[in-house]
Image (cartoon, rainbow, N blue to C red; front, side):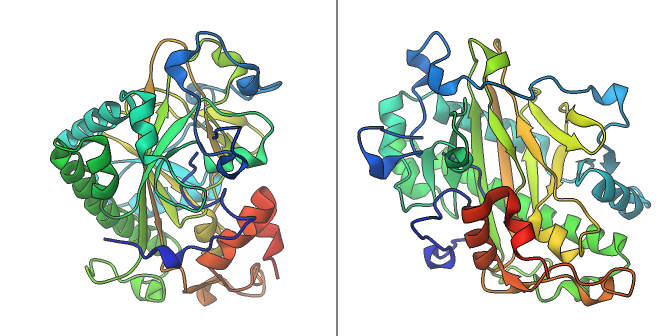
Length: 366
């Protein structure tokens, strides 16, 4: 699936809030500010640019709290369990999702292969200031005074354009794996959205304005984000990915077997979301919060780093066509639950998030 570049708003104020949490810069060139990552192989101590005064690296263990639910998608009560998870956390893990385990292994192998390339090779596919795909630093970095211990690679549609620059004669396998993974993630995203819809007492037809499940011709948007968190010499003072919510309907994350993801729970604080073999993390984005009329949380999450293991992950962001108006579904609006948000397209919401970041939802309240 190829996403037309024109679908995504690009203004002078906007380059830092598109769905993928991407990319930092060559300081001498102001036009590349907050794009290119640090060359992590060239430093042995944590640079001042990456030293955070305060971090939230210490999280509660799920064993000491209620924990993030792990839901079997074949369970006849899956929709009820999903509703409870969406109301409390905005996040859950899923098992029996039908994705072949060997595909995860292939994605991990190819992702590590990519990030192990020398810095000068990766810079061949560096994201331009106006670009959406390619290699770089987290887009949310412009909202923070310190930089993140992170590098990413964003794929929209086919990865072939960038892969041929990285591996002129050996890119076929990388492309095949990533295209297969995107196809599987898109189908799983739509399956989960149907369950979320059912958990709210809705029918799949109530979401016809957003997508038509299992329809190969639908033009819903999907973005694959490959994430790298290198081993860090001083992880207690560094941040892998700063606190944020996603702007999508939902995000599906493969953690790669190394802990680092944390989610914020009200009256609890930061809770570690440890990898479960074969499971995928699902977190709701801002658009799902809007559609549910505020009944479901948009999960605030972050990523921390460690000193001994290079953590990689793969996040798939799923959303509606960017020109479709998103608003609370009519069946979820009543006397006790008045309409919370005005209609807004994904494109308009991305504009708001680019300018206001954490306050974007407040901006579109009715």
